[in-house]
Image 1 (cartoon, one colour):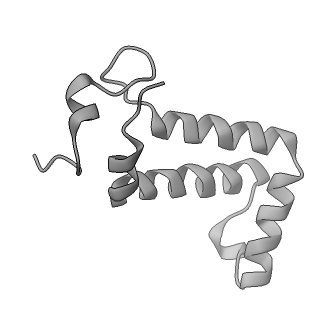
Image 2: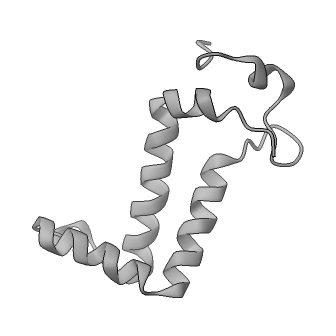
Length: 91
């Protein structure tokens, strides 16, 4: 799996996609709405509940996988051009 992790880690949009994949999947799988997460204790309990539920763990792994792969290339690799980048492309 050839992915230019160095560039992806520098890209805030990558992290936003990962965060959305994890949080939205956990909220959906556990049937929780944002209105129910009113303090940090309930927020962290939500993640403990998620980790203890194998269905949620598999769903989060699947969501993160979908956030990582580039659907414009064949397989799970970045394009040859993307592998050469030192920073996220501007265009």
